[in-house]
Amino acid sequence: MTAPATAEDKRILVVDDEPNIVMSLEFLLRKAGFQVETARNGREALDALDREPPDLLLLDVMMPEFDGYAVCERIRQDQRWDRTRIVMLTARGRESERARGLALGADDYVTKPFSTRVLVEQVRTLLGVA
Image (cartoon, rainbow, N blue to C red; front, side, top):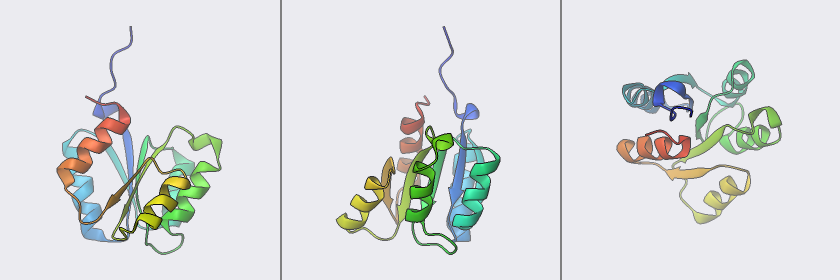
């Protein structure tokens, strides 16, 4: 029988062009026990995925290089990243934008501002971590 997954077993890539959001999420996720890597834009996110696919991506929608929609679409077109979960983070809360993110393959869509405690719980749930 295999042991249940723990936070220490899971890698998360935080992708956002707002340094305060990146620092906050990185701190909270590390405190929760996760391995965390960061990227400041869509290009850095794709480069990080090529090096070692994370278990979950926290992906901002509005960023330079490639926006979150383009990154999500590219991830879902490459079977190497089939197991990577995607949570889109955005200040854009219209239902049409949420629907677009989910249609492109995001597992969840969170509108800023968000509760960091709730977001960490969503990450735990998506990754099956106790």
